[in-house]
Image (cartoon, rainbow, N blue to C red; front, top):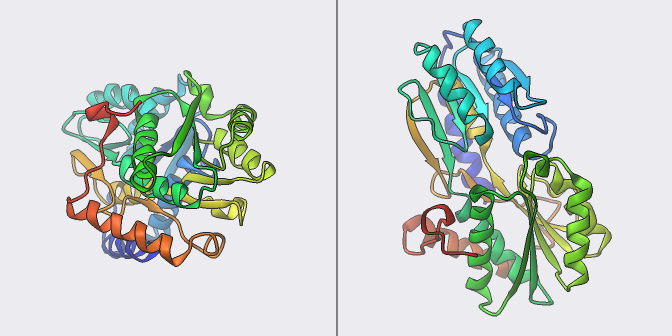
Length: 324
């Protein structure tokens, strides 16, 4: 799985290295900040890789409260930054407002669609990557009971859940899946204690693999899984190194690719990234290679190839609303 992702990133970096930026790009991280070891960190790594490849410099801001989203976008536009890249769907309204005010400035947003001629909207087919880790969870489970703990209860997170459930049932139609969300407000992304509490509840009900799709709240989920003697699945960034031996894998969401592409030149419209584009996948490294047997890898890779070829369809919750 690592080779296709590296190849895609390598081609992108080669293209970026040949580009000369006419303006300094800027990135606005969402709540949790660039050191959240998950979603925002993936964006930060993309900005850093662009910097290393091009020798360019970029501006950045970490949102601490909701009012700062629009303020930061406007400030960067006023300073002549371009493109201005917003990390996360909560920034959609801010980017929509500011992009209209500065029609000659390029903007990009991740995980939302802003339909303006100077905005590139990056969306991900998270259900495809979640399908693969759902397969791995079912293959690794001894109890036949899987867990899912999400962050904020929104359609985006339920897309992860729906893909995870489909992958698990593809392997074992009788699998039992327990799912819960950390909350219904943005605070659900930044509450590790709440994540740990919900995970312990699932462990008490017999879950032996849990998927954490919850931002920094997920750090509590992963820790509780380790403490409870079960396996966990990380999200967005490769989190395998956080708890070697108990992190079955991570559902990687290559936000870094979107940031590098935007920094290299915004292409207005919607850009969808899934398995075919190397935008999502699962992580395999020295920290979890003993947990994923050759047979498990072979079966999941076969499914990945079928999805890429279009022969295996994974339902998108936000389109079909077919999962719970």
